Length: 252
Ligand code: BTN
Image (cartoon, helix red, strand yellow):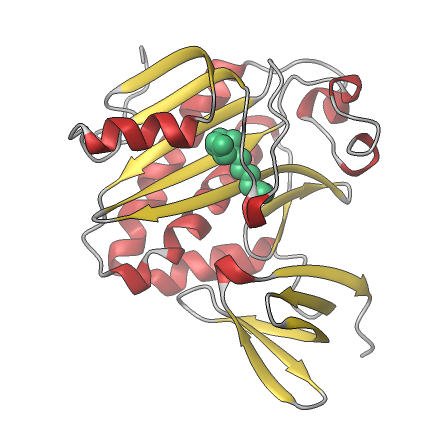
């Protein structure tokens, strides 16, 4: 991608008009031996995927991208990469557009209380696909009636379209920086996440395969595990298995 100025992330970048899911396209490339940092971008996805098996609406104008990472860290540390993704996007939006998003555990990007984007981390043997979805130049009318009240886009928020290529490049640059830093200092990444968190300190409901419970989200550790204090004691909540929904402000 011309003008990207990164060492690894986005070297190379594959751009498609339409794919099923950029995560699937990146996985195919991974299986063919594509290098760490390979990026796949599509203008549209037919079957975009979200967390927890949800589908992800991916109309033209949004940023739908996946990054192939071949981490040097052991697998238990890989969830950090999802946090690196959300922090990188948040920093890029801040620096380029002065837009400050909040992060909802684990990696939802929230603007004005509505979902602007999200991160989907899918691990395989020896590699991980970091999928990033961001509603950039998308009108709310492009979403279903059900979804429209819950989502927002940068165009909707700012009142004008933004330079999608410039924003993509800034996100990839930020991602490269954050990923380099996380190798040596994971707690710095988690502090960057905490600074933008809208989950910590809140009363939350955790929904998992084994049922749901409520409590106060107290903190995350360096691996992104959420610590929730419930009446029955402290519960540790792990990224891929549960969702968190804020239900009311925590009492002081
Ligand atoms: C979430 O549920 O919040 C995560 C959404 C992740 C969507 C992105 S769009 C690019 C990549 N390809 C997919 O199919 N999903 C991710």
